[in-house]
Image (cartoon, rainbow, N blue to C red; front, side, top):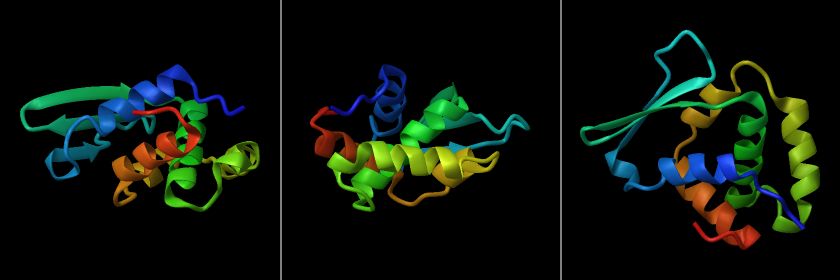
Length: 112
């Protein structure tokens, strides 16, 4: 069974609650774990802790097809091994991030 933390599902929900063309995701804060999601005039500041970043990376990889849903534990271990201070930036800079997260949730059977 794959466990996706509630907070990760919540963060993913916020990120793809709006059409990708309407979102701006940035990190202007010197704290690398804080991101700002802007959709139209609505802005939400999120603090994404390292363990949440690892879960989001894993979810993105599953959604992108780098790993199958059955390989969740292996993908999670790989994401933990690769985590560094630039991981939040890596997430922010990934084109189609919201699509990959949504697809990852679908593949895990956790509808978005």
